[in-house]
Amino acid sequence: MNLLKKSSYFYDLPEKLIAQTPLECRDASRLLVLHREDGGIEHRHFFELERYLNRGDCLVINDTRVIPARIFGRSEGHAGEIETVLLKRAGGEGSEKNQNGETYTETWDCLTRPGKKTRRGEKIIYPQGLTGTVTDVLEGGVRRICFECNGIFLETLEKIGLVPLPPYITHKLEDKERYQTVYSKYKGSAAAPTAGLHFTPELLQHLVDKGVNIARVLLHVGLGTFRPVKEEDLTEHIMHSEYIKVTKENADIINNSRSTGGRIISVGTTSTRVLESVCDENGTIHPFEGETDIFIYPGYKFKAVDALITNFHLPESTLIMLVAAFAGYDNTMSAYRVAVENQYRFFSFGDSMLIC
Image 1 (cartoon, rainbow, N blue to C red):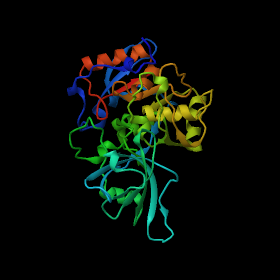
Image 2: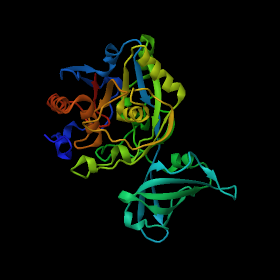
Image 3: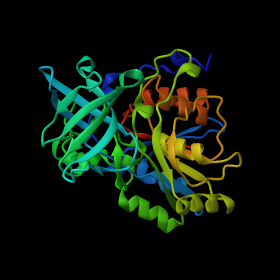
Image 4: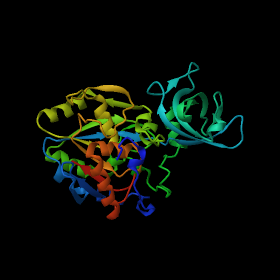
């Protein structure tokens, strides 16, 4: 098996196993525990997670918050509606007030549909006085759009935008908070870090009471996370960069946990990519703010992460490739076959894995 071929990460998934809605109780999801050393599997529920974490371990969570990044407008020069999905803020971390003192601008990298109507220089009119001008067309059809509005940009988004649920979710989400983690804080993601959706405040408190340390990192989920792999040769796939941040306070929590014998348990592929981006060869985490385009697939040597909590991912995605790099290819594909046989729920609102 050539592990550098995209097709090696395909698996058959019955459509009925794609979870369309979240469970009533977040931590009632099933938990497939995969032991890396021998490939052994246990079938649990997420509320049993604490039995696998010990005093002194460190749980690393991504506290990004999903924004209503899907907006609809009309071009000044063409008829018909234009759908825009915001992916990543381009330059700066907030709204800038124009010289007139009345309007604010922000520039974002976006996907638009139909793309042919959004050429460089095109102006798009959105509700609530929001306008956008296409300033550049980037690789992969991404449009860089400078938005202008009469107030704070993210506040305007809250009024006119929709949460951009993945295309495989066709049912309406009744409660938008169910596509946010309970610890989400910093707005900026186009998709949720879904491994964290299973946690409840009570479960997190149980872990703290047990002596588990909790550290926060930040990755705003964008195109780098969910862009499909088009190339058969993985070495030709280019990850889009995503904004990340690790403060000194949280780096210290992680490093102190490791120095006293604790394990670093990463919640999700996003937290994992942050940790592996900001650590040195010894696994020491360093404070950092910037971007990462790290692409992890089999052959990668992990330096910071000892255990991983993750959902079940799409076939041939960069996410399942990261899991295969961490758990081992054979272990991963075998676990996915077991999950299908046992009717686990897949993808964003689905069940979870603990790889330890």
